[in-house]
Length: 194
Length: 194
Figure: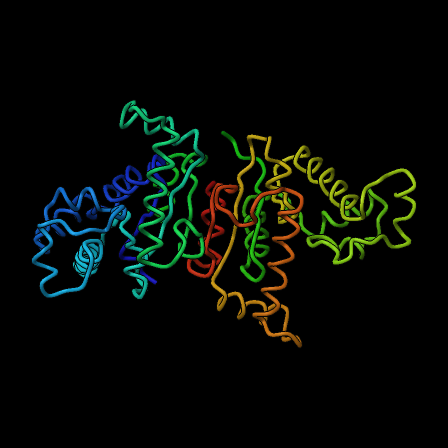
């Protein structure tokens, strides 16, 4: 089997995004993350900022804002559904375009019918992740532990809502890497070798 | 960090034992599996067959057989506890002896305080595993699906009883490999590179 697409799911602070970018560089293929958000924004006509905010977590209320009224004239979909379908379409089109890495956004699930996808999950112990998020994103009012807990919870809820599968369950991935133990560079090396 | 010991946990039929043996061969280090059972048998004086039967699952009743009466004269331990402590001691001693691979038997948990251990979990989809166990162990009265379910359940119960952790939860491992997707040889290559 020839792996054309790499999807990378990751815990917050595990370095999954950094790993993805390094692998993409090594393999000279594009890495889609905020790029996906841009494309979704353009294709669906949704506000870029709105999607960036909503990208990987559900709204607490699920209520429609004015911007979405148009969609609801011809659809019963919620705002979250609209974003999901737009993202899904973009991811499917990116995968069609050629070899690439897609970070997050349930890409592993969306592309599950393809047989040229290798599905990676990156995780790490809480200490390593706490250290990393402070180093990369700086100190915030909330403790790193709380930020990790909140973000993981949102990602898991988003994933489970749309896929009906458990986020981070090895069963849905081809390889799960503990970046805290293996280190970023070793993870890059392993993924590149796939 | 220099990894001296590799522990391999695995789902039944995932090929984890075969992978372990191939890695051991490549690295020219010993691989302990039934060997551990032998050593436990010798050191603890327990019957080899009894341990082989009990190796990775708990008794349904937890009752003592005649052979264990002696132990209970000076101990409140159950038969399962005696086997666990004997295995634990053997695994600790093997790890002290030098680089090696240890398959199953909660070695990842037993050796958790060491910083020279790389902890691997091998899993696969049910179809691949069913095919594999029929090919390797032959047809039996029970369907391959039932055999997988029973064996995994026993391994999980054994692991969770003694470690109070979840068997197969990535958090407890450094790397989790889907042998059904990656193939045996790729798994061997990745583990060897660690």
